[in-house]
Image 1 (cartoon, rainbow, N blue to C red):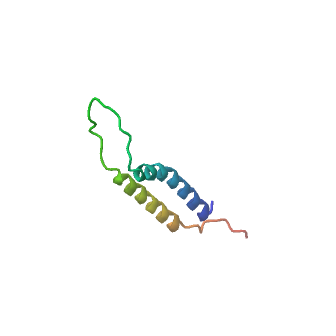
Image 2: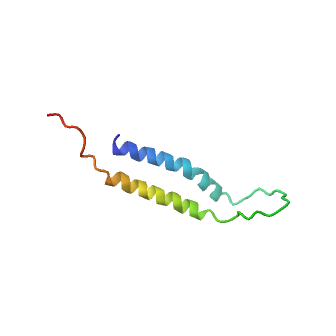
Image 3: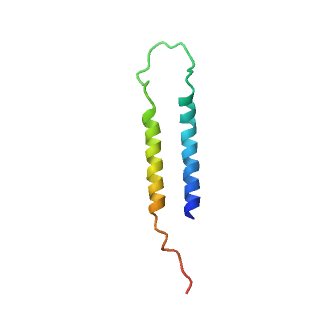
Length: 75
């Protein structure tokens, strides 16, 4: 598989993961609902965006650093 193909697959995977996160972060309006208790799990999701960025950076480094000199050569 060529490097461009790998980059396209990586970009597609990243967009599948990042699109819902970006959409939920972009909407400032939250639906109100009545609850009997409070949740202890609420917090900031910025670490998720940072983790996705870190994974994208590592993937880019791996793709760039890959050595394709082992392709077969006809005699």
